[in-house]
Image 1 (cartoon, rainbow, N blue to C red):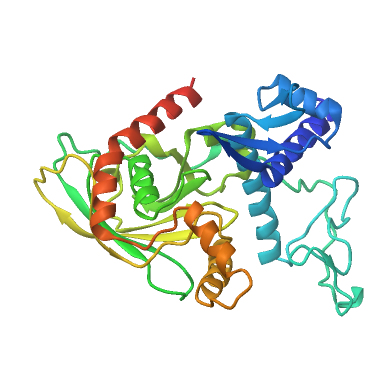
Image 2 (image 1 turned 180 degrees about the vertical axis):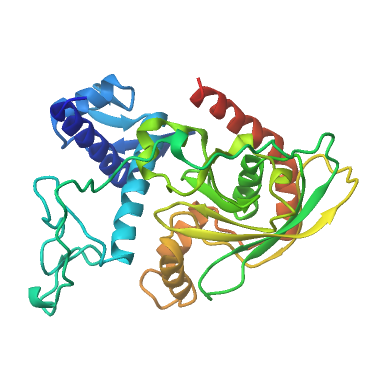
Length: 367
């Protein structure tokens, strides 16, 4: 790929991410669509249309994200956001511009956090950045084959009849406890566990997810199949083995390792602490079941723990001018109080269909 092609690919990637972040979700007579702005470069839009990522609806003058466009736009937006977040968390790390050695990507007095100039933070107080050696590569790619190898099935049990009781706690930063406990067969995959978590916490399964854990001394980053695409390798953690969620069973990791972290929606940043609290031998459990839980889960897309805190304040105050509209929005998001018996029935009735839908998607993306 020459420099011109590379620059165009970057422009298309950033445009798709912006379309995903700024699109409007419209529902009409049972159909759902994500409408993007048409105010982007015409040639870039044409290329995205050719790639099947957006569709031009000439009769209405509408530009819709396709299912792939929505998904990969989500991927790009999340990955770019994670990279920016890492630069904020590690402000003393050297940053280099594409155009010259040692040139900072950030202007003096400009912060990524607030998106503007900080008048009280003059240039003289900015942390010094070391000069870059001429051979420095600011973003060396980590090839998949160079990452630590890990075979999920290396110690897999044949005819594994175990099940695990798993405690899952959503970290709401002290707003209130929100946890669920499930029992799930050891032969279930981490994709199956993702499907269960989505149901029991009332998530919509419209954003990216990943698990982080360790097994046999190796750090694992367990994600969706599409992340094994070489074009996305630069975003993956270099010291982790990257595993497809549908290809690794819970019994390949648990109970020797008893904990994991499940992240959902990298924009809102929901973190779930996963812990195996009991191993059940010779279980006859065929599908996962919810056995206990407490605490209302936040509405989807509320804006992370900070947005949820604001949500709770508004709905608790009838005098707040946003009170009625916030309640109506919460109802549209199906943010109902947690009901253990109702969720138990919902999981039992939905799991097979949810899993089948996901497996079809895995097969489609692995072609």
